[in-house]
Length: 550
Image (cartoon, rainbow, N blue to C red; front, side):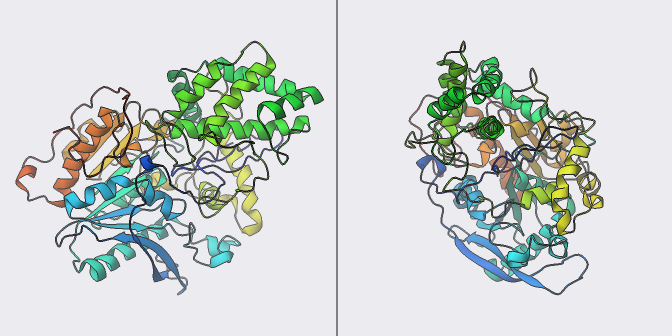
């Protein structure tokens, strides 16, 4: 069965729902999505609340492809012209699975580079997410509407929006467009270059698992394996976590043990463990914390998915290793120490809630959106093998993961979904995996990020020499999920600062190819400096190019 993790992000996670054990593996919580309110970014390291105008393209066609309907809808978009100069480029963010605010706030590099490039900024919201529902509250109710939830329709929206914006706001239909995208947005940016190469001059695709699909060499177990690696590199003894699951199960079997769990986790009245059946919910809640901390293991405190300290995995491991591994209560206290870093990173929450919580909301604009996409076109398949591969439980095999995925998708049958809509070949057939005919894409990925497993690697598909056609691949030691797209920070390791510098030089030659400094473009990418953490007073760096790298 597949795990339903959204790439973004965009990354974010849904409230745990578990099926009974059976021959069909079950879908664990979507570690790419999180039920909570629209994020409030009040951490200085997330950058300022960036300035942009919020508006709508009022008459976006519902069907760009076949003209099956003349219906239109309002597509939301953001823009900023503060630093735009005539002749400058348009930076366009290919919005992904959620509220556009989250992606604008966490792509600070676009705002930071705009003055240098004289660039306009434009962020397009993905249809069926955020506030861009083609049929309002009916959008997810029936296949009559969901049939238009399609990547190629999304690209039709983006082409229409870009052309409209260049004509009406920039008054320059020849303005060069550079795409930006992280996670699923990074996938969209890279695929957009394949599908519509004439609309843009290049794309920066960060942490995009373009290869996490059937018929590649990526194992369905690789995501979970990298989570374990990140925790182990950060000081955790993996056996304390895996033994902790057994200890937690032991304690759920008795009244005395359940009382100990409620005390250790400081559970509020809505979340009290009252029976052995609560074990699965608590495990899912902890697994979500483990997974998201690995994704967002940033070098400074941040509030992207939840308020967390700098290097949160290291902080979690420190807490884990201070507990007693020789008793069930001690092992369970270690699990709490990990989860508490994610759910209570500020240390200000007195009680813990994991069920029926007051602030549960869908942070991405739809509780079913990513799930629908994984049941149609974005058929990412993943699950856990259990130790020694990972920290979790064996819940599938490579042989039954596809059947398990399809079984879970039957959730949509009452809305008109059929098995024929599950298309594991869509990405391969429509955009391909090799990018053999593509030009001008920068692929970045962080090796601390579990999604690194499905990202483009320089050693694959003969991409080592692809820089000659403008394809640049950077694999960044110690980096988490699309860290390179965030606002630069004093605490960024030197390899992050260096990759931003190299990419900025590439982007400049896309935007201004006649500049004398671009006479020898493209040139082979340089090796990145060794990864090393910095001990500094973390704070954002604004307009700091070249970040000490020239």
